[in-house]
Image (cartoon, rainbow, N blue to C red; front, side, top):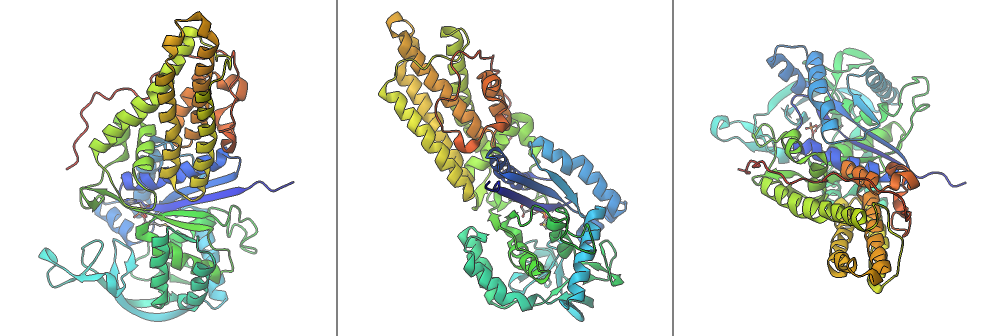
Length: 532
Ligand code: ME8
């Protein structure tokens, strides 16, 4: 028997120095749509997310708030990061915190292995560090400060002064992996995506790789280096390992990979942290003799007022500011549809409100309520019989098969926005079909009863296809529609429908009783704030 295809996925783990904003939620939603799609396709799916809790950035925030770093992290995880997953309806299978015992133990096992195998050495180090990035900055990202920071060297990303760090550190011999990394990018052109990210990574590695400082002695909020407890592990080295410690690496120290599952995985990250994931991380894995990720996909930035949205620049928008008014489904739909995945995209309240009204409320929601209302009125609330066919019906059937196949192909290549655009062709076509077929006119003529039946069967079956294809994107609305269609009783749970067969026509069963459908996307009465 053929092995069940598998799909393992990770988001970055987010810093707990502050609460999440819509940039973090964007990454989570994209990963969630991919995970739900694959799960519904029957693939053996595993989806991991979590929080990054060590390092100077968290330590300083906690200290500024007068609490111990672990207490700060606990507070933020419980009050903000885990609740985010409910706010936007994320279906993760696990949530890792870098303060989990399983993670700390796995990191120690990994470090010891690299040390024992000769990939780590002690050295003196002096360089400019950005606490915002938690990174020693390469020359290309160091600029002269202006204003209050005139005369100082600042980080090109955070515009804040860099700190000169001088200490004895342990180093990972990353430079030794330069050629193997370049060979990897060459042999697997889809390892780093999209193409712009791949080109950037290749150019960076071609310039020459330096060894990486992987320990700190100036503070102690981190995982101790197993052979020298006067050092803690560099926060990025610690954080990247979450992808395997959550999956069981190091659970058995005598045989670190004995319990490793769902690895390798696909990694969705923002382009700001591409280099960590496409250069440092695979080099670490190569050193430990482990497989590199399946893919590293770097998405773009959400821009607000033309700038990368950030809390520090006061452009951060909390996800619930949107979901409180528009709901989780609309949040998910909007960001997945309006932003090309892999490119930057601008957020505006006006655009969100316009798409909500035109696409979700008028386009999809209205279609569903009209069809169900006509079935109630003309067919006693049951799925109509297939009736007498006409050429216009075949057009819809063929389109359903075509959009289902195209959407699946687009998801395979991470083109989430194009997958949704393809599905929406069916929404638009069904609306057009109903307008042209005028079922309300057919209903007036008893001789047209069979034709009326065919038109409403086609529309109802079209909705069945849409509920299945849209379940990964707008799970709540799709589930309500599924129930209202009466599909649950004959076809089973929506989540159990094989999404790759969604376009196979004729699955909804004539005669099945349907149920009342609450308005899927109600008119929004409140005035949304305008984007400044
Ligand atoms: O970098 N647009 O965590 P972080 C789109 N802990 N995505 C955005 C965004 C924006 N404006 N702002 C943030 C870290 N993101 C490390 C990661 S992984 C081993 C460690 C998203 O809390 C995007 O995914 O700073 C980005 O890469 C991530 O949040 C950075 O989150």
